[in-house]
Length: 261
Image 1 (tube, rainbow, N blue to C red):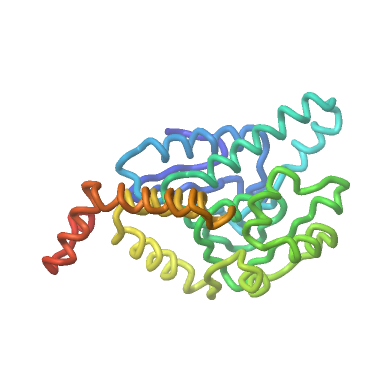
Image 2: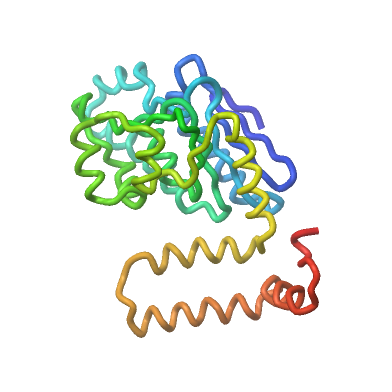
């Protein structure tokens, strides 16, 4: 599949999705958004793919919105802006709810919508020289459609600071806030990616999907009878599933399960 502003490669059950506009720091416009939606839908429906790695080509992960695209939006009316924003919202929602585990590999700068993409991924590995910024208020706008995902990642208190100041923060602050899970030197970045990918590939593909759904279902809400019944139902389904049966038998028989072969 050929794209203008991204690349998608698939090898050994891993899809690598790369933002590929290095000349403008992988800033995105309506074309790139549409391409990312298409690529994510392909990844979602390809049963051979077990995880996805999101990268940026060149010096940066993503500078957020393309300035030329934003310049065009100055002349859009409310309805045109609404439809445009809904496309970005769709992208973020698809990435956040992708059934396959997702790893974001962050180097250089991640600004605005770039932070949104990162916040939608499951595991974030950042180079120690990476820097982040929710820069929207400096431009007279707000980080609206990315906000649910950024808030999930960094929490309300941090959002109150970084949404309002639009200041840059480094990878160690991203780690402190919970936005990044691993911070390492640029030389160690690929080793860390390989390690996390290897860990994920040892696990049951069906269980990984179910685990992501479990997190979404139990993150919020009261721990009441309805939630207790729901979680009991989920584990009963997995225990009686093909992969659940295989995993338990493999453990008891002291052998590798079929998905590791």
